[in-house]
Length: 228
Image (cartoon, rainbow, N blue to C red; front, top):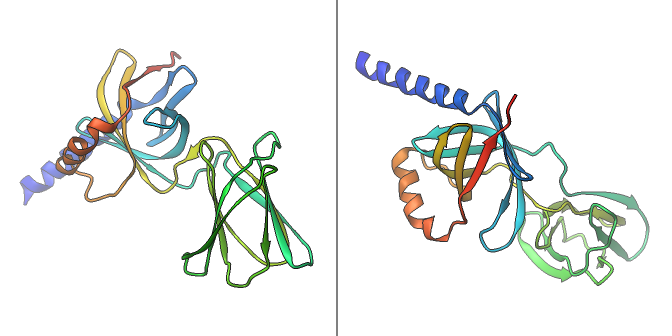
């Protein structure tokens, strides 16, 4: 009993010490990893297929040579929408980017109250799409490559203006990195997964996952610590 308690306390102290060692701001050109008060805030470019900026923030932990970030709801800039009440047979959705430029060919899925897809559509070249006011549609899911998508509530007799933000915001997911080395103010990281399912988050399960995905991950990133 005492031995088990001692081991638990020891492991807990090791985790705290590792977290404290990570404290600081690290940069790889325009990309960054910030570790502060047990939280990690990151912006990195994913080079595994599509090139897209990834954003997220949440509590982090280090298990062996794996860095796990448990992202929460992102408080920074992300895709959003506004609506204006109107009367008529149709509701109109217009999608623009951060600069107000219309985004053409946005994919739109129509969801019912159980989040089941009951239809699909595509915006025109002006980023515009009209929907017959139907009470069967409860939500709209909008997606476009290279931008942070959006799932929004839908009510008839409203027009919607959607603002898409470039990059992919990671919320309420576990982001996993392989930490190849940390020394002399540098951290060498490889992004393994952005939607890891928590199955205990122990060394054994992480190593098993790494064997499955390592052939498909991107290149190693070197983040250099900002000098105070």
